[in-house]
Amino acid sequence: MWVAPAAALWHTAAKSSMSRAAFFSSFFRVTSVSLAVAASTITACSSAPGTSAVSLEAGAGEPGSGGGPSAVSDGDDAGSPTGTSKANGDVAPTPILQTISPTFGSVGALGPTLVVTGESFTEASIVRVDGTELTTTYFSSSELRAPLPNGKLDMATTLHISVKTPSPGGGTSQDLPFEVRNPVPALSALEPSSALAGSGDTTLTIVGTSFEAHAAVYFDGSLLSAGAIAQTSITTTIPNALLKAAGGHNVSVVNGAPGGGTSSSLSFTVTNPSVAIASVSPSTALVGDAAKMLTVTGSGFVGATLLAFNGTNLASSVVDSTHLSATLPSTSLTNAGNFSVVASNPAPGGGVSSPFSFQVQNPAPAITSLSPNTVYYGATNTTVTVTGTGFVPSSVVKIGASSLTTTYVTSTKLTAVVPASAFSSGASVSLTVVSPTPGGGTSNGSPISITCDATNVDVPLGAVGTLTTKSTFYSGYVDHVVSASCPLTTLSDSSHQEPVDSFVVQNTTSSPVVLSAWAVCSANGSVQSDAYLAFYRGGTAPGDDAARMQCAAGTVVSEGALGLAGNYTSPDANGSNWCPGLTKANGSGLTLAACEKAVVQITAYSTGTGTNYPAPTQIRFKPEAP
Image (cartoon, rainbow, N blue to C red; front, side):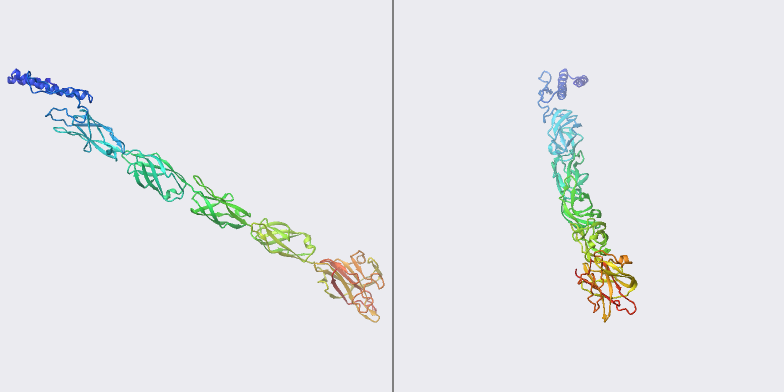
């Protein structure tokens, strides 16, 4: 390094006739300076901070006058933030900044030590950030180091790093950027971590790290308005519109650029509330009703709430958290009983309510008509159609406490078999319809009238003691009959035939009576009314002698000649010795059951011209108590 200056000096001395003493004095001075510069360069390039280095500085003396290096440095100033390596009066070069390391940091992190590399650094060179000087350590003319204060990393920004070397000379390098980046946030907890479906606006605190001042909070992709933001917590509000449906929702935090990013998410759970039923309106219905609209009041109803009737889900709609409506179909109202109504909410949360009892009742039955509503006494088993309202499949037709064989046809029609025994006594029989509980009950009674078959009846017997008088109209001719025992009906004279008159008599009451009948006679001296009288059970007059002469106990009663067995006298003889009468009083009355018929036949004794025994013109009938 010093050869070129020495050669130049020798050239100058030769041209100017410089004395040897002057030449060598100048030579040593130039050489001393060159050596000092060389030593300084070697020290900067090869000596670590704190190691020794020799620094030569030219003295002012000539050779032989004690001149040479004027000072020796042990290099203790190298690697320290202070000191200078240039000789007094030297001009410092302008520093050149090439790289910095690292080139970025995170908001809130500790400030890193910047390693600054370049050219023309001196021990007086200072690293600066945005014009603020940093504590700088000189490593070499190409490397400086300076710690970046923590406070410079309190927000995302771009810092400008430069190197300045003070005058004389020196100057400031160009800037290099140092980017303060937002960190990627990290979440550790949500407070609270759940809410009930249907809740109102809910305050949420997010706990974590590295939240920047403008961090954004997302709830399943929906941006929430952030409230207070600290580096380790964010307070925000979840609007109720996001809390309608149960399920898991992802909560994340995003730090913006520069740097930044999206945190991993934490789950916020919207749970269904427990559900309860307080009332159902209406709470009853009748079997056979049309579909019913139910209004259910309770708590914990959400959009996913289901309502079940007897285990079958109904079509329902939630009005609000305390009301829902549902349609109960008519198919659920076919049978009476108590049925459970249950509400349920699905998971998460949710559950099943306690059952609420809904009662399907049988309607109250009512009879409007019977067909037939009249039957003859003694009829056989008869099927009766019962028309009315409120009939159910379990309805039963009854006579008193006795249930009849009943067939359900519709809610307005039943059929029932009334046994013959119901028509053997009484004037009527009353039918009712009974439906079981719940609801139900016994209908009004509806009578079936029991009447007598009055076909061909001439004399309907009324109440006991009622007297009926009929005129006689004799016709045809039959043999006379007389009675002996049994009573025995025999022909008195098959060649002597006389006309007869027959009357069909019927007991029209519901109780047995004794039939009494007699002729109304007259007498005028030797002229006396005379006739034969007979009773035949049944409603048909005997058609021949065999039928007229039958002898069966309780079947035929006949009157005979005076003085013979079976001679019965009329209470209206009026002096006639031959006036016939068959009465209870004389022991010849005929007992008739309810609606039973008998034939009363009167036969003239003699109708010839000039007879002294004319036929009676009237006959009387009287029912008497047995």
